[in-house]
Structure formats: structure tokens, C-alpha cells
Image (cartoon, rainbow, N blue to C red; front, side, top):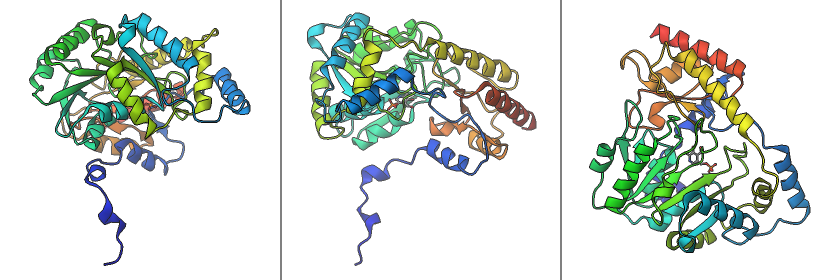
Length: 381
Ligand code: PLP
């Protein structure tokens, strides 16, 4: 029999689909100057000081492997800040520097999941939460939050079985922009304690919070992995930097697994990031304020034509397709693309296909154009 590469593909790879977001990007490639509401990254560039520091680090020869867990100069202040923010016990808390928050999700699941274990998260969800458990032979369990996208404790508890091991929370949320209240976080923490669940708190959008950011981490010493990311905060999605803090027993295993996977975070990125924790803090608040204005612009522009749960953070809005189910979100997104507007249909992030994701990380001009197109499409349904 001739060699056939396709026959070699593992079940693990076959079990996951290509990202639906990438499919929209492929369609975008054929459009001329589209209004692009599909991009999950800030439209501002990395601050100049960080760029200079990365270049300096390269010229200074910081181009070799770093320790697996990251450079001590970066870990120490981040750990200090984590302990101050969470009041976790110093003797049981460790921190690992990651090649992006994504690496933290991969390593956390590799370190904790056995085949058949179940992973809870809220639907709509960030796509990795759905796919990564499957790569570990585990079972993703999405807990419905429609129509308000709030955390409903009774639904969460009803989804728990003896195999449930992890609960992933993300606030501010991708794709809804919803931020969880203290009462919701307290309810989730009580459920995690009652059922001995490890909570992964994905806080990658913590800088894009239009009121003080609340974290579940504080309520769960020894029972939470707190994931932080630099990608969105500093517009450096391509640089790959994040970190995870949590109980020593789990961080030690994640560090061991990092040795055989990501090896270490890019050295020059770690050295540049020192600039964010040392003497001269880099202030990103002007960008965050600008994004808050963009959110208001889009919510105000669409609220008469679409059902919207006003988001409290990140840079996403997740409106409902009008027409009471007359058309799916996939059809609506196709109509938008035919009008030179890129949005992501809800079924990329959900078991439902009734809503669509807007990223408002773009210029005010493009936002105004996109709002006009969406209002026109809503009128035509
Ligand atoms: N978590 C959430 C909720 C995200 O939206 C993203 C990226 O879009 C990530 C994690 C991964 O980000 P990164 O690996 O760039 O830190």
C-alpha cells in the first residue's frame, strides 16, 4: 500500500475543528478594505519603551534559553504583586512565566486532566476551553448562560458530576464582554469549595475593565490557577507572554511539562517585560479609556436595532441576531461579509448560533461604518 499521511492522523487531532475565527479571516483575505469587527486584539501597537527594551535585550545577548520557569528578575515582582492582590499563603504559591495565556491553559490541563475528567466553563466561551480538554481525553462541559450571559449558580451546580475536576471562568469575558459581579464570583467559589474543583481564572482582559477588576482568586487560596496575559494589555499578541500563579503542587507539574513543550518564554520578551514591573510603570489607561468610549459608541449605535447585554470589559459585544430565529448567526455573518463587514457568528463560541461577536478594537471611523451596515442588515431581516 502506498504511504498515505492522512491515515496517520491521531483521534486527538481529528477531534478538534479548525478555529471558526480563522475561517472568517480567510474570507476577509478576499475583501478590499473591509470593516473588520472580527479581530481579537487591540488596534494599538506595543509601547515604544517595550520595543526598545526588547531590542536592547537582543543586542545585549539575551538570546539564549532562560530558566524553564522564567527569569527571577521578572518572577519575583510578579509573585510579590500576586501575593499582595490575593493574600494567598506565600509558602504554597508559585508563579510560572508562560508563552502567552494559551500556554497556561494547555499546561494546566495537561497537568491535571485524566481521560474522562470533565471541565466546566460558561457558554458562550473562549474557543480553547472547548477544544483543549479533548486533547487530554477529557470532556468539555459548557454551562448555558443565555439570555443574559450571567453566571447562574444553579445551572453550574447542576452540571457537576463525580468526574468534574476543573471550572474555568473568564472575566471580562470573550466573546460577551461580560464582567462577573462579586456575588457571582462568591457563588462560584462556594460551589468550587463544596465540590473540590480547581478553578482556572482567565484574567487576560483584566486591564480592559471599565470598573475595578474583580477576581475569584482571593476567595480560593490553594484552589485556583490565576492566569494573566500581556497580549491584550500591551498590544503584543505576537510576542507571547503571560504567567500563571497558583498552588505549588500544580505549578511544579506545569513547570515540568513546560520543559518538554514550550521550554521557556522568549528571552527578549521576558527582559522587555521587566519594564512593566520595575520603576517606570507603563500606563495603558489612556488606551483603556479610549476603548470604553468605543464600547459606548457601538452600544449606543446598535441598541435600537439589536438586543444587547451591555459589556463591562474586554473589547467585545455579543448582540443577538434580530428576527426571532428567522436566520442563524452564520447566515447573518455571511450577509455582513457580502456588505464588506466581518463579524464572527456565535456558533464559533457556543452551542447556539443566535448571536454574533463584534470586536470594537478598531478606529472610530470604521466603527461608524460598521454600525451603519449592521443597522441596515437588521432592517432587512
Ligand atoms: N484567554 C482568552 C479569553 C482569550 O481571549 C485569549 C486570546 O484571545 C487567550 C486566553 C489567549 O491569549 P494569549 O495566548 O495571547 O495570552
